Image 1: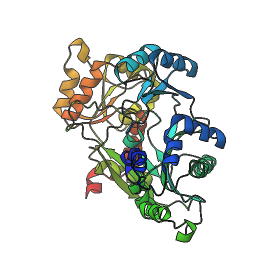
Image 2: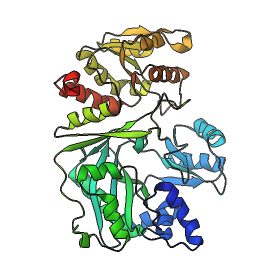
Image 3: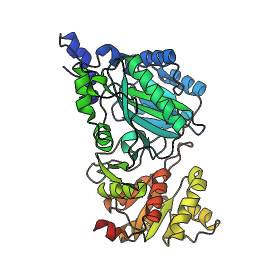
Image 4: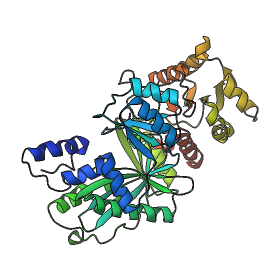
Length: 433
């Protein structure tokens, strides 16, 4: 039986199947253990001299508090052996951590919680194939949204659009070391962080095929599942005519945009976080990056308009970063609406802004604006580092999804949208045609 082509569920079944006498071919249980077990994986990284964010596995609340103090806030906390980032959260202080460990997860000796240093930077992902002697990385994907958004909810771009050749070289070197060091036979997936100083860290290695395999197969022209299956059946990469670690990158741009079902899943908050919420994905490709972005966004169901009103509610920590983005909307002719604090900030920087009352203070102005159909985009961010998550934001996001208004909770996505609107000189209706 092949376990590594069936996602996380198949990987979890590999050991019980082997215990019952089923022969596992391809990536075996020992390799799965080295990748999935926290202690085993850390030993592999240490032996290979590959860095990862500082972290610990904890088995009770007080141990978790001590670990976070030693590592330094903010930290990323999650249960071990999870799928889709379930119950994963960025925690900014001890109060948030205690609340998380008491209510969000079960924690004991058999169910440790992982506490890792949260490093803000670019997230980069590869799918690769190892035959036990050689490794093949068909493509490197760069994610638009910075770390803190689940990779499945991020916009993914191949070839990468902003990382240096030096960083690409480090990523490829680590991928080869990890494939051989873990003992992979077949497909595997690696997620990386590239920080602001271009240091490269490993987030995790999945010893299996991942959700990005179809996208990368389409983008690079290599049928990864077929190549991996031949490897599992004993045909080496070289015997399949693959001699390079990393082939020449395509000249075309390929973009994968997540699809969400906010209206169909009751109680789901339309805020992007480390916990995956998307239910599908769409692809766009073109000789020009921003046209590929536009096509993928449009195919994902996102409403794109180059006119109208932008409603803005920002966490204090995001205001300086958001300012040039809001100015770009303003310069394009968009009307700007905001709550009092954000409006005062924007006005002080020369951006004419309509003030809308806060929902928590009894005002319906924001919700009325959304329901009226005049709002083209909503930009709504919440504080990561203070841990303050207001109910107003939840109500705004719910109203946006109910009225099919495009909402952004991450400034990186807003930046990409603006690039698309500014650089796509032909109208939306022409592209539709």
